[in-house]
Amino acid sequence: MKKLLFLINPYAGRAEIKTHALEAIDLFVKAGWEPTVRTTQRPMEIPGLLETRAGEFDLVVCCGGDGTLNETVSGLMQCDPRPLLGYIPAGTVNDFAYSLGLSKNIPEAARAIVEGVPFPCDVGSFGGRYFTYIAAFGAFTDVSYQTPQESKHRLGRAAYILEGIRRLPTIKTYRMKITHDGGQIEGEFLFGMASNAISVGGFRLNEEFAISMNDGLLEVLLVRSPEDLTQTRALLRAILQQELDSEYLVSLRTSHLTFEAEEEVPWTLDGEYGGSLREVEVRNCHRAVQVLRPKPTSAE
Image 1 (cartoon, rainbow, N blue to C red):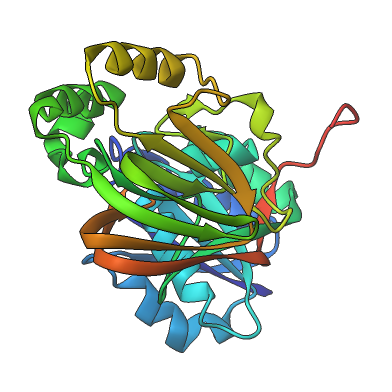
Image 2 (cartoon, rainbow, N blue to C red):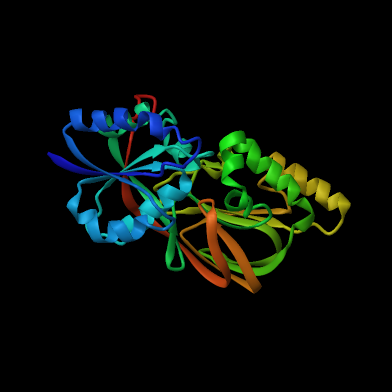
């Protein structure tokens, strides 16, 4: 039988995997896989586990939120060859899953893995780390990893919104120079992100980005700092309506970029703390992992 490693974060989202794990395992066995099940015990356990054991398996399936997926992909990036990747989303927001059309229903997601097809997906490199869908700094980016887990379980996405409102008075700006494939940008920014996803924070991005998750490019959005109340109102309107031609928003697509700041900047990688850095290099690792996803319909 083909070997499968099933990694489960039992505390992700509303912990629904606890009631559906056996059903998922049964689906894998009936499809000809021999599963080895491992529940995660501590943060950042998965990369080390995969670095030593991934070669024993043909498929690695992780069940959890975006943080669990980030750890799994980070571990796979250290492997050669890399096993196929399956993802059963069980977190609060699950941006990566939405972008790839993966079901939040655990049995349906497991069925899509055994019946699906490999999709060669880009992965972001952030210094010596990796991200599956976003690296971001600035306003509200710490909300995802500083929101109490109990609130996430109880309130779902609303917990993030409430925590964001609480942090409004502490918004900080950063003076930075950003170098990309097409040149340089300098300024005072209150938010910035490099992403590879259709959805960020549960919100679908503007279709003008023409996002592809395996084109070798990252989508970059920078938000300039307003100088007065009038500019603040215009900025809020531009953000809410995703007006990419606004003077307050800078949007571009690039395979590589560097961020240089005058002070240390806290970053978020896939919703988890990514460190505080003055300078960092971000790259697109083109088609780095093969993710199993539902077979495309004729319309796709």
